[in-house]
Image (cartoon, rainbow, N blue to C red):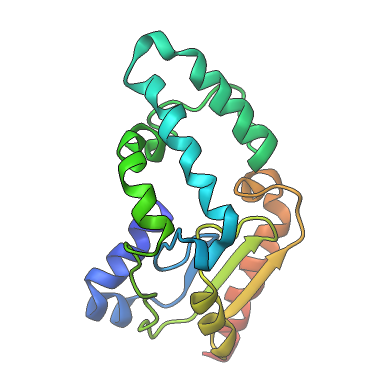
Length: 185
């Protein structure tokens, strides 16, 4: 289903989500994205690589770029797959040629959408220390301020693939969160 789509469901169907979701686990992805220099500094440029590397999904003669993407994700993000991502694994790469047109607007904050914080259910938000690009300070501050929510930063060298590489530690946090919520009900 995907983290971004889950949050989109929550925002679109607020009443249904707030009435029926008992607990929500968010791994690295906040309720809205913000890729501007004010929020992320120079790290906001991290999305620029997708504009170039995604071209291999459109132009077969650029197939070697898939290998470059794979290596970049291994080195920078901790990805440990046995083969390069394909367009189904990495859908946010195959639509990315359009990012080159959007990125300048993202960087100056013109595409900013205020964080969604009107959920009424408990949220466990987990990310690695390095994986901050898909979150915002305002969202994280909201999670930290709520007694029914937990904010966890795991100290892993990986960025986005920490869940795949350390499932035991992530599951320990999730189980603890659910156990606490069941006990309080």
